[in-house]
Length: 398
Image (tube, rainbow, N blue to C red):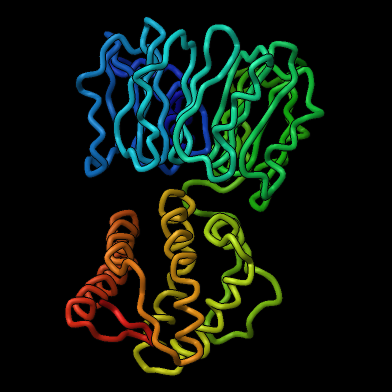
């Protein structure tokens, strides 16, 4: 298998050249490796999408004179030859409003946001900014030569070989202030990798799958960072790789509902919980609801045991589709007091039950068949009880 074919199969968003008619695939490496598709360029500067789910409205057929493309979780952005940008797909956070951008030399896309690098070394950004990931105006005097986006953090490479970063820093993925001699950067889901001029690599951030263990790598000419993995291309054409592969391997242990509640957040669900839950105490509420409400009814135990039996699959769906994590977190926080009321046996009317149904349907579309059927089944029951104004597991649905 050729190196370009391996990279296309295993890292999805990387700088590479493959056989015609697709000449370049995803000219930006970022951590949104679980996005809805991989954008690429035809020889004539038109764009194509491989493995894209059409329900997000992405349509690249009208793009022309495009010289670089980047893909977020559910949106795509293209850099045109005249330095302007085009974008399409999900616009939940206004991330495709790039019509006024000009003088660009590179574009990058994260989860719900878009970044552009201008010819004067400054950066522009638009879209989701919950973690400050679009706060790139502070780099005005940084003389940037490259930008890269992870799920919720943005990294910039300066002309002097130093690196800047903004955004979510729950794993230390933006702790790059002391980096120097860097010639290339790549932002993974929640980790950041740098290629140094001497062919070595450095990395910070989430290391649950050993994706930051690159200290021994030598003779590198390129790096790529995915959601939870890192790939390096050596001068001789060989590859090195660390982290979770696309088959979900990683040696993670998953707890079951019949075991004692672990003292800490279960690994590797901590990655999802850290994104979904603003307050760590919410996790305690969820566990109490599981034990005091769900597990006390036959139907509740059935749903809980089914969910836990597919725990690893569910986690991979969330990690590969960070937008789902964001929506889940918003729904949980919106109904936090409702959850507490249900635990006390008080009236607990779910807020925006329709959004819960939509989330379950979207989750089902991304999930393996059995897990998808489970999600659809729950969505249908929620919809039915909502129409009837009934109750479900301590909640009132209207």
